[in-house]
Image (cartoon, rainbow over all chains, first blue to last red; front, side, top):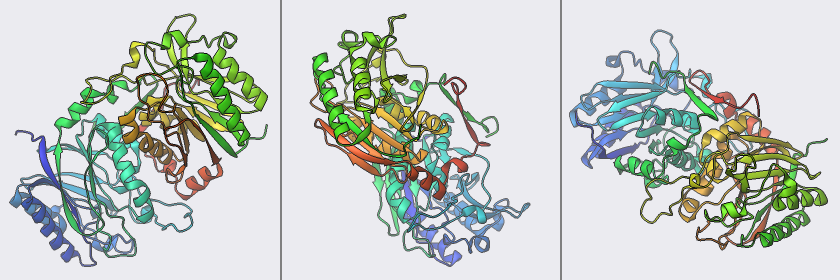
Length: 291
Length: 291
């Protein structure tokens, strides 16, 4: 199959409500809207089927070992196939059938509707003592952490997946670059303080430090739940961490053009990869042998 | 000796001329000005005794194995002692006496005038094919690269040293955090394009990703030589990569207050260190046994 290096990505900044069926239906609408505007690769937000609220995760969780029992996954699989698009399915709460544990999980569907990869959030968002005015949140009270990085080969390049707080760790992005990622997709729901201070900063740095594309997708601000979300889904380029497209905080579909030729152009002009000093420091990817 | 955790840092954004003696004299003036404004720790720019110009590095180079033969170091040692300040001496071209090689080297002087550490720039700035409109520069045509990271215990905390392009590598900052740095000082001379796009971005990200302070010091823009310098020396805090102090592009002394208590406050509120996943990735500091 010919790999496509220049294409449109569609970012669905969804308004998440308290009704799962309504969320599935509206996510489908936004995916259709993105495809109609020419998007071939479509990204959903973190927790797109469920408000970002610890007391709801168990109730909204689905079994992703058998996607026929997961209405959220069935919709993504069906719409990927019917529209012929690749979908990075944000995340939903997953209940592991064997252990009963909950995970914050992203499913990736190819344009033939197949489930290509499943990424469980590796870095859970656990606050310690809150600073004055800060929200308190401890994700590990509810979720278990994923144990493996996820890089997936798609028709639209080699894509690394991180979920929200995974963005805060340069190590994961370094690891994805080393595994050949062209693009890292981070569904995320930063809050108002980290959103304003760090959301764009971290995306831009991951892109320039690793000379690749970064795309983020957040739920919109007036999603259900007490957790106030920053929004501002964004696509960043490899050369100077340039903003290729971004949004405000309302529900919207962002379309941005990605051209992987710019990655090689950037690396030819200036290869950070070749300038790393592996006699000074070395970075070990512990799952590299069994991705 | 009691370690001081709250103090003023003085950043000397020097105008570098073609006359080495004038540079030494003016650097001394700015160090005096910083000390008069209460600075206890003083940072100079990259290449403060020499224009940033490849054809001048050999001519301006000094032997730092014997600081009595280095007029630039003698001034720093003398002024550190006479004012009772700690000086992170930016960088100058060093000629290694035994190999004859040139290095881009930072010397650190304690308040008793002793040379405490010497950091040779680890990541040399080597451009490949220039992008349209970009400056061309290949530092390794002139300089050899340093082989060791540098963390130095001072009266004003544990300080990691990087020089300019060293800032672009998240690995070095991760290594300094792991070695216990409170502050990373990066003397640097970013150019106009990387300056505008990346200088502040990278400083802020190194600070927030590692929950420590970052200080940078650049020569001022109208320094001698054809290389146009961005300026904008800056001090960044650990909590949200907050800008504590910054400058424009003219010659100036920036005074900023550092309070290491904020590092612990930030880490208590949210410990990125404890959230790293050493069963997923691991980072090896190859000189850790012999710093």
